[in-house]
Amino acid sequence: MSRAFVFVLDSFGIGGAPDAAAFGDEGADTYGHIRDACAKGRGDRAGLRAGPLRMPNLERLGLAHAAALATGAPQPSFTPQGFHGAATEISTGKDTPSGHWEIAGVPVRFGWGYFPDTIPALPAELTDAVIAEAGLPGILANRHAPGTGVIEDFGEEHIATGKPIFYTSVDSVIQIAAHETHFGLERLYELCRITRKYADRWNVGRVIARPFVGEDRASFQRTPNRRDFAVPPPEPTLLDRVEDAGRKVFAVGKIGDIFAHRGVSDLRKAPDNMAMFDKALSAIAEADDGDFVFANFVDFDTSFGHRRDVPGYAAALEAFDHRVPEVLAALRPGDLLIFTADHGCDPTWKGTDHTRERVAIVGAGPGIAPANVGVRATFADIGETVAAHLGLAPGPHGTSFLPARNA
Image (cartoon, rainbow, N blue to C red; front, side):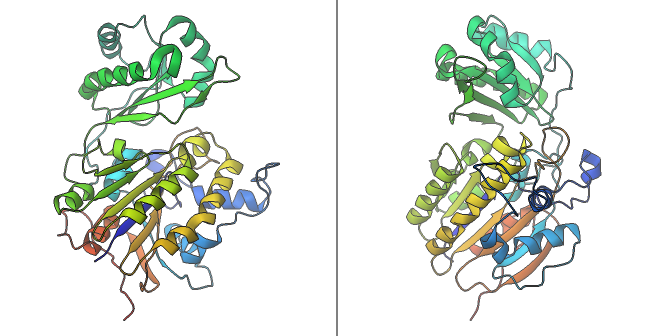
């Protein structure tokens, strides 16, 4: 036993979900379609990137092999240097909490509450109660909307009236956007706490604070001070099990928010993927034997997937891949490292929402032999593999695929 690290490339699906059609996503493939678009020149952007998608480090470990497993495509001709596989989500939603909870050993088998794609989307019973308790002059938007677009459309009116911007999506979520200075960051957080209390009746997974700055439509931009107010998982997760065993859980990025800060020993946030990578490396440097580092890299999803930005997504993948040798160099004997995702967000797909896809399992560790771990029946197999590696008792969901180590 030594340490375990799971890096979640938020929304980096690899296609092939057997139930994709039920979500309107049959054929969605985030990795495959970005790769194809780049090969055809549709991933080019002046000053950003050009040419084929270049992810030599993750592909050397087995990313392309994992994708072939997920979709049934022919396997690449070379032998990968790491272990690889694909995992199938069994949770009922394709949202962030469902994916992360299932990775951590707790599939979401109940139904989340969702709001209709109507105007208004949120029921008056909910919004009236929030307006009254928070002392608001009213709210704006109250519809399904992409986050950046709704701020552009309503930001100026928000500043003029003091009314916060409420919006939702196909996920079980209420998002509230407000200006950090004109409205106030702490006031926004308190508004989200109030909304969280009333949202429970509708079984809403998350209430998300979306602060922004700027003075007009042309200058509005979201800040890194997002905060998720999530319901806690219904069962003990891998994070709880690690802490109960007397070890530390380092949560990097929005992991703490996703798990309602349960089972988190050390919380580290940063404004973007590269800063998050730095935080993850610092956590690895400080982690002791038996500790767990769980990191989320959200830019793939929020900055590029939802915005259907193929060149931006491709450039972010290449920047991440460029840093993979740093984390491999930080591993010590006995360590286990897994790269995976929580759902898809195919930037070539219709709409702006997540896509139902399988996710990659790509990993390595000193002395771990290359292996094909196959197509796993649930994301929970990832959590059970980490648990087995850390010497924890098996949980009720999932099966470990812990690879063998060389003698």
